[in-house]
Amino acid sequence: MAINTDKVLVTHSEIEEMLDRLAGEINRDYEGQPLVVVGILTGAFIFTADLVRRLEMPIIVDFMQVSSYVGEYSTGVLKIKKDLSYDIRDMNVLIVEDIIDTGRTLALLKEQLLTREPKSLKICTAFDKPSRRVNDLVPDYNGITIPDEFIVGYGLDLDGKYRDFDDVRIVRKE
Ligand code: 5GP
Ligand code: MG
Image 1: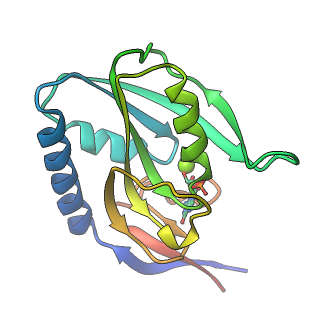
Image 2: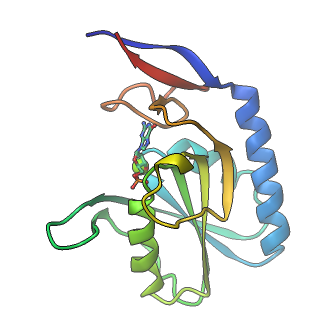
């Protein structure tokens, strides 16, 4: 079976427009207030880097690496592979994610970070697949809504590959 990544879903210039729009919304909403930006590894590393360079308030950049799995007796369990380096108590915190699919990971992460008592906690995602959602999670800032397809590029991978594409492509297995 061969992997075909020829089909471009989001062009590089559409990504740049999306970044300018999101940064504009975030700059307006926080206006001069310090912000802790929490990029979710590994997928959001490029999006986080591009977004923070467009932000105008004083920021701290931190990263977390998490995954979720559905436990036998629970709706989901969060596994933290890498935790934050900073204390977020009383801080404005913005989670920066590559893509929201079922919403399980971010719902659990949000719950976990709220126990640390930040001043505020919001979510910014580059891409959203709302048709796949299993809960009521809605991002505060949404880049581009996409159909139910598996995408790669702009940080998103398939088995560690294709993160370096500067556009977003649909994966077809043939
Ligand atoms: P969920 O919202 O289902 O808990 O999981 C979201 C995570 O699944 C994302 O952070 C990403 O790692 C992965 N994911 C979901 N959809 C896609 C996709 O279309 N392409 C890639 N590369 N990863 C995806
Ligand atoms: Mg991810």
